[in-house]
Amino acid sequence: MKIAKNTVVTVNYKLSDAQNNLIEDGSQPMVYLHGGYENTLPKIEQELDGKEEGYSSVIQIEPDDAFGDYDPALVKVEPRNRLPEPLEVGMQFEGMPDATDDDDETMIFTVTDIADDKVVLDGNHPLAGMALRFELSVAGVRAATDEEIAHEHVHGAHGHHHGDDEGDDEDDEGDHFRSHPVH
Ligand SMILES: [Zn+2]
Image 1 (cartoon, rainbow, N blue to C red):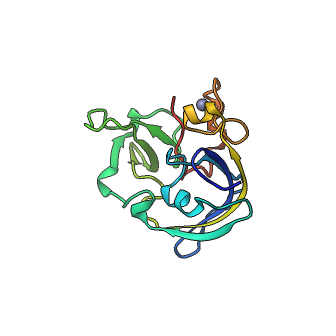
Image 2: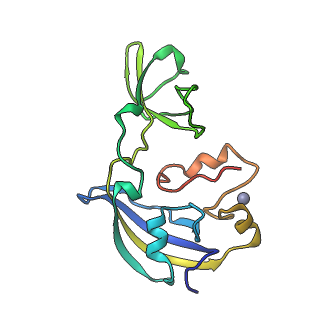
Image 3: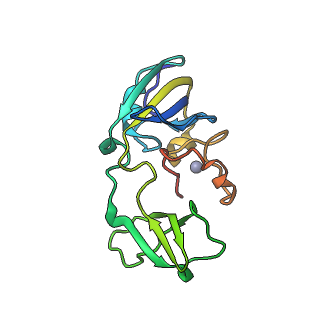
């Protein structure tokens, strides 16, 4: 079966930066709904469109087509007491710290530094400003179900699970370049 709109594609991948430093070894395949649903990067869809199981390639995606340039304005220093305890570098918070921000998109802030009574929060995507090199290998293609098409994401193994919001986070590691389905 060829990859086309409304197929579910299983891709084994390895993600490196432009200098070939490994970012993610892709121990879990990416499984996404193909066809412009923003389940994965458009450049990946473009590369795989019309291909079949067994196809493999290496593509490099510039920051503009991935997670944009690094924006120093998104780095904020906040008093530590505004954040919950325990606090560790690498923790992420949603919608902090600028509730007054005029754009409605929820931002994810990552704690990048903790010093005495201050915390540094970075609202940049962890992969912002980086060119990304993907080794892709198509492991499977199937037709999407009507429900998957209606929800605009994949269900089942490696896909989106309903009714268990907590459990949804379990494979967030290594999931940086996939959008997270929101209902
Ligand atoms: Zn769904």
